[in-house]
Image (cartoon, rainbow, N blue to C red; front, side):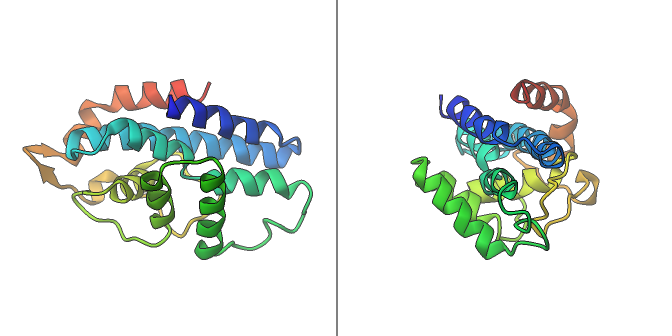
Length: 183
């Protein structure tokens, strides 16, 4: 239910954008969030004891600051000029997520992604989010200081499962879930 509500809220913010260039960025950002959410759910389920639905929800809202910035950019033309630092993005994310009464665990993971390094194998919700964000093939149009990573650049094993193997075995599920979220 939280994931559905988050989906509606994020889409409503994105629908307020009327400028074609900003709308294109918002659509690209949404595709990125959908893929990160799908990856996060599968990674949490396969490699941790974390709740996969919480990971999905976290992936959906992890760029909430970006949607807010894009929605405001139509009124402040210089808002997106230059790179926005991670501290400002984390503060904005925190404010929006707190206003939406998002659980602290999720808010903390979204904020942590601006500061934590990639940890393998993942243990926390923030680790899952950082890994999913790095694995996403659809990149965020708003840079967050991390470069996407090809899963072949690293691999790990947990309980006999490898990252590479899980991504291969669950690729259809990840694609279907990401596509379903893009509706």
